[in-house]
Length: 243
Ligand code: BV8
Ligand code: ZN
Image: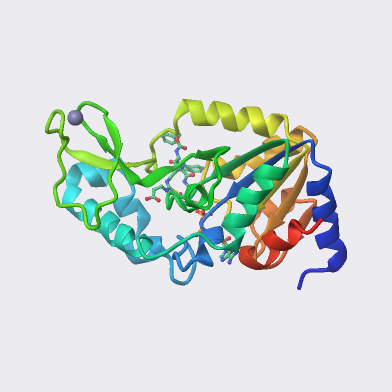
């Protein structure tokens, strides 16, 4: 259960934040019916992430990897943002300096209206040519396999960051900037096991920020949190805006 004083403490910190950063993971989309990666309905468990979300897997069997992404795209096509996504989009309007970092590739923050946003693991609705590097949006469900580039006929891949791939240096620079200069970091719905995002709380802590967490479970991030609210994002995030 969440104690009122803990909730009020986080609410007060958000209301008086000079520079607010929010980091989200799959848990914020769980309330939209999107399976998380490591939960009981886990996406990875069903398909063993190390088998599929890697460049080697795509090299070895692009059709299998594309079939997994088509399965996820079909699932996501029927889902929309929930109250937590909309509340964060509202928070962006209110706060002077606000930045949202998401590990999610589902595009639900953008759909809810968030603009000051880094999708550090990419976006499942974007495809990238493996030959000429061209990136474009493709919302077809399913994508006809195997997809090829309209410009050079190269094989297309999902424009997401796989395990063993580096994040976009521009995204990383932006994340380090905002984390080093924030006075409040709110971490919502991440198990805190995937790097480099799992190291972001330590950076904010080093910069003297107040760190809040929203998660039904304890996570490795909880150790960095000044306050950790045990609950669901869709219930707690809207409450934090009532000031
Ligand atoms: C990199 C895109 C440099 C694809 C994803 C050994 C030690 C340390 C690091 C490593 C290591 N070996 C390898 C590494 C590096 C590796 C890594 O961290 N591995 C981990 C697993 C150990 N990282 C990388 O490879 C990264 N690149 O480091 O580059 C490099 C280069 C070469 C070699 C080495 C390093 C790239 C990582 C990006 C991988 N791509 N996704 C796709 O999605 O198709 S990761 C995937 O996991 C998703 O992006 C997801 O967002 C992310 C993190 O998972 P979570 O979001 O936290 O989701 P999860 O299910 O785990 O947790 C959900 C949470 O929500 C739970 O806590 C649950 O309690 C909570 N929850 C549930 N319901 C709710 C809720 N919370 C609130 N409300 C609710 N209702
Ligand atoms: Zn191309």
